[in-house]
Image 1 (cartoon, helix red, strand yellow):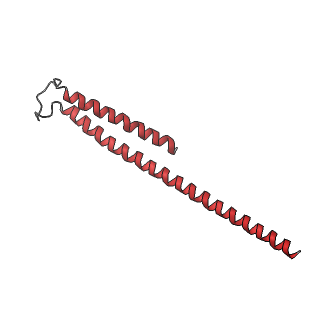
Image 2 (image 1 turned 135 degrees about the vertical axis):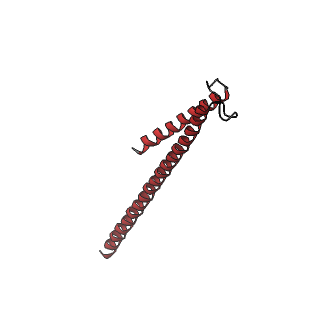
Image 3 (image 1 turned 90 degrees about the vertical axis):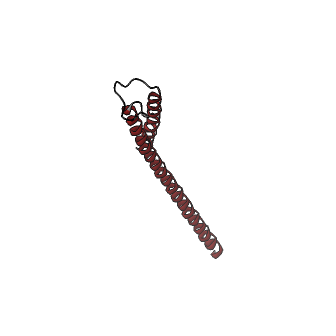
Length: 108
């Protein structure tokens, strides 16, 4: 589930970036909006609001992607530490077994 969710969040993130670029491009075309804009420096308020909403969603998906990556990195580190501890325990068991074999061979 973790790997699927990161790809979904990443895909949504890229999709929203593309939507934002398209919205900004539409806003810069000076298309007739059918009404007189309240703010003359914003040609179409709907496109402007859409680009702001897309920007906020991009921030949310970026945060979700980043959090998921950090979670996966922490899980990978835990796996590495657990494997290292198991290897050290196995190595110690082998050393103890060899010591017992040497001790029993010397006592014979």
